Amino acid sequence: MHTTVGIIGGGPAGLLLARLLDRAGIDSVVLEHRDRAYVEERQRAGILEQGTVDALRACGAGERMDREGLVHHGIELRFDRRSHRIDFPSLTGGRSVMVYAQTEVVKDLIALRLAEGGGPLLFGAHAVAVEGAETGSPVIRFTHEGRERTLSCDYVVGCDGFHGIAREALPETVRRVFERVYPYSWLGILADVPPSCEELIYAHSPRGFALHSMRTPTVSRLYLQVPNGTDPADWSDERIWDELDARFAVDGDWKLERGPITQKSVTPMRSWVTEPMRHGRLFLAGDAAHIVPPTGAKGLNLAVSDVVVLARALEHWRATGSEELLDAYSDTCLRRVWRAEHFSYVMTTSLHTDPDQSPFDGRLQLSQLHRIADSTAAATELAENYTGLPIG
Ligand code: FAD
Ligand code: DHB
Image 1 (cartoon, rainbow, N blue to C red):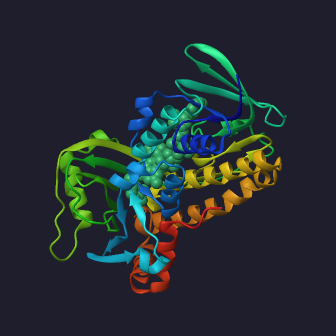
Image 2: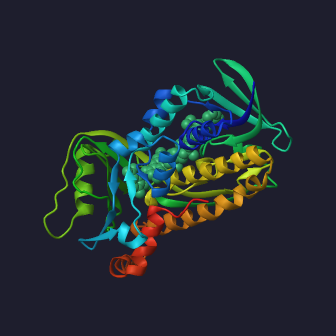
Image 3: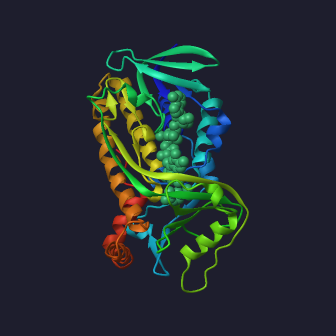
């Protein structure tokens, strides 16, 4: 089998790239290791930056998002038992974000690929190796329906996430990895209860960080900072709600509504970048190339911006035969990736309580949070990064 662009991974990065290429008339094959139901139900991100919303609309994947997504014009920072609102449009020249779950973005992109005569999207297709990245005709080796198969390509794109295999095709001599791990994780829950807030609440407290988010007007998504290695089974529903209550506590009358918890999971926090994001005819995009801690809601949005840049470069190559934009791909993306890494790091370390932090560190955190609450300049810095910088 041969295709112009072989895509490993059918998460947001792989599926959106396939959609963009379909629209540009460039053929591709997507190999996804898991089955469709698994990919569609995997609970992950929930916040789309303005640029992600624009990209989904532009490729015809925004219809349900515009109907069902919730536009948010700000967030609330909570610390020292007080609330401070950050208003995005007034600080960013009109930018906002959209609450629309990653599961829904993935469902929309899968439906479009399968319904509109797009190229193949193979579920249960496990890529084993990329060979010949330095040659003119790279090959993906994969297994599907119990058979070993090969896909020869003009270009290969590794959209196979943090545990993928594509980046192993970059020689050790070429690849550099930058990493930081954090001494805490997130316990995330989904609950069948209307959100207790209109906008997301990021709360810093001496007991640790908490985040109140949502999925729909009747489903809440909440997170608690917990120690690494936490077993969700050790957290009863009552313990979770009690701890959330304690961390969101604020002077004045605000009440956290409780409801049945339908899912619990623990996610470790990591900052991680691999450079470069291209080697020969192999490109890396999304979590295959970089991970951010989730506090800034950047992971999914970075995956989208990578593939928007890559699709544009492939279109330029198809139209002109020039690899100029493909050559610029890694540098173009890494500038944005490192900005998001920095923002996610700052959000994470400002809002969480490090188990080893000194009282001095704690006072610095509070000073930084007060600065954001009191200064338009500091709030603008947060708002511009949160709503997302221009793509490309
Ligand atoms: P992925 O979504 O990981 O997709 C990669 C795909 O490749 C998967 O479908 C996988 O099955 C497939 N694959 C892997 N190996 C192979 C192979 N060998 N062959 C074929 N297919 C393969 N971001 C936020 O902004 N907020 C959050 O709250 C948040 N929570 C998260 C929770 C978890 C547990 C994780 C892991 C991530 C979370 N993220 C969050 C990050 C965000 O979800 C990711 O940044 C986003 O999914 C990246 O998309 P992607 O397509 O690059 O990678
Ligand atoms: C969600 C996740 C985040 O990491 C974040 O910063 C905001 C919202 C969410 O899952 O809704």
